[in-house]
Image (cartoon, rainbow over all chains, first blue to last red; front, side):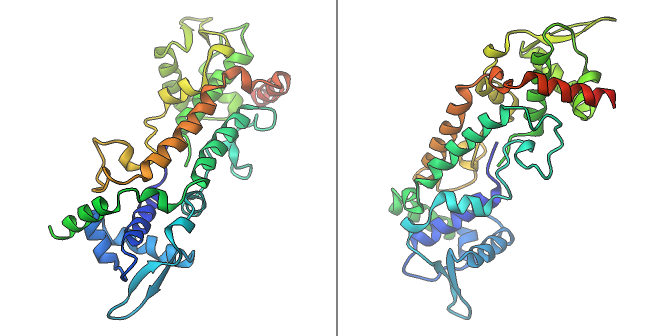
Length: 147
Length: 147
């Protein structure tokens, strides 16, 4: 069980922006800092803009910034947007389910409860909770850039 | 975020066996009842035997049965065995992680806590909790067989 790499990269972009509130950041600089493909980030950044998590400015000195402070970026809300679905088992989606015993089987209630417990934790946290050691993170990100 | 189809099918096989404690069941009968490929179930059943969740008897009247009562089949323990991993983000596995900020980033602690909350729910439940309406489930499974 895992979150998608898309969610993972989304969190990394937002973390980077949270650590550089004073400037407009570019996709190239973020992809270099994390050592991940620029192409992957293009889609991530596009969606973050659509969701109004970030604001982007075009042009020579353009780039992106967080559209709200880190403590207002709720991890649960973000993950719900970036994950294609949170259907832990096939029977979570009645439309696509093929298991014939979906109605009387009570296993799904156990998994519903587990998913709720998972999301409840994310809903209690914001991006600010990921930034306990900002200087150390910035130092690593910048050393990657200089390689 | 989802559990693998492999885990899903494992749970379905165990449910079927729990509902038929009086007889030895075959892969063919279970695959027909759920309408899923026999080939998928061969691997599932093999692993269930290796993990001593079921006992199998070869021969003409052979088949499989639960090796322990449903209330002793813990869902959390089972899912840990069937899932290839529970690494919610890449940084959960230090061996394969590529994210450079793994050490100072505190986001992983939020996700660790979420995974723990998820597994705590599963650890509190057994296969017996999936069997609230046994007659209704059996009826559906047998109507599939007669199709």
